[in-house]
Image (cartoon, rainbow, N blue to C red; front, side, top):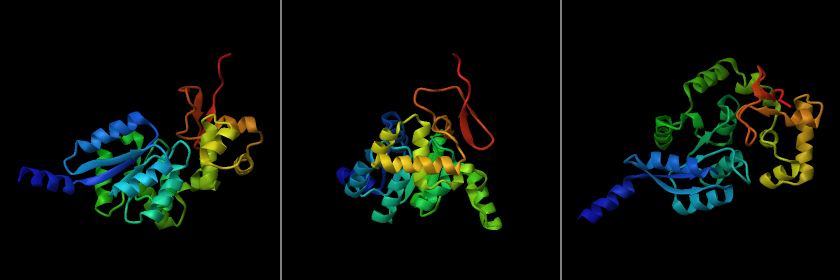
Length: 246
């Protein structure tokens, strides 16, 4: 009898699959989820390929996805999940500015967006809303969506990055992290020629004259590896590297 009761309890828990390339964050998020009596972590992955295989094998009820994955773009993974597992909702958990990425994530097929600064009960609230068939976004984003439908305008209209495609935005984010063209090509599984083409389009759309200027201009939320200071956020929503000491 006790064994049967344990099985029933286990079956009653909703299975959550975590996709993030930072082990420490995965462990913290897993501990948060496992502390809830109705939730359980059914698997974890750090790449898109491993995630798609794990989601299929674990029969997850919900997937938490980071956008900045190593070797692939999180938005592409969200799109794949939508196509391959249409009944499995995806919750995006990202360090990137929600005013720029939230609408793109929802258009890709995500059902909710939470920033990593909200790695607390907000994540649990979002998870349960998605499991109940609802969507989740911050109050700030809900207000912006309301404005969009009332005024028939795009949420990103005020951002200069609105003109970039999802792929160009992914390339721009990696440039802002200090990645070389070859590294970006390897990370996104694209040719060097294709990345060079994207770089050209980005410079043209953002009216950036040189590759040097492109390298020191980055979207909000994309901090170069190993750098904590030296950048300032301007009114255009971009970060521009400040002067460095000699």
